[in-house]
Length: 344
Image (cartoon, rainbow, N blue to C red; front, side, top):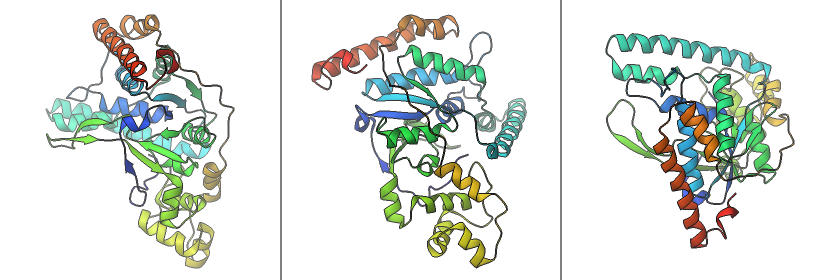
């Protein structure tokens, strides 16, 4: 779910070219769910191999990351570890939503409601342990670093960005800001032409850069206060306070300073452990990040994973890898990098 702060957070539209030579710490789970949700047939059916195994996540990872590499972007994927106990109710809520969506998908298909089926199918996406391991294997074969977080991936991505290991984190959720990430890139995995809602029209989605400090200055608050605002509007660890949206939460925090004072001065009781939730964002577990190395794609291993195991077209995979090699050679010849191997 993440925290809905879009009404008060300002983003700057950028291009993939603006991220050339940048290391981007990608929220792996967030991105994989994006692929599972969007890479589907018109009736909502995900891409599958001959054995009926879902391959939408593999297709998204392969082609999207080739695009990143062609633009000179260095992605590193950060995978979630063990979630805080307080997240269990939210995880259970999501499981119920997915199951209800799967049932609605089946009903809509039987009744011929294709648009409803497509919408329900997107909400039914499920990321299995097998998919996670397949994703790690493919990324490794592509020469892209994989990092395992001790807890929430966004927290470690924020730590990596603060430390200068990465230039920014990439996620669709504003939680990255709550974890004190200096820069966050949104829409990285869904950049391009996308269908607009139920209409037959399309819109172009661009990457967006969100800078924490400039937003805090513009809002006139501290990061600690941004966390309190997020708690009021709802996080993965608590429901929103009824009747309070981002703008109202901002007004309350600027007037009273923090949640404790709001409780005392307004005579209300927040029915959740907000001090503990606050600590999740302000003091998450840290990890020692290994040295990040990018390597040339291992074509043999990529063909094994995609073509031999999951029935991808050998010609399409080969063509994509040749295009990447050609693009990197062009970058080297243009002086964008001193040699082809400098990228890796």
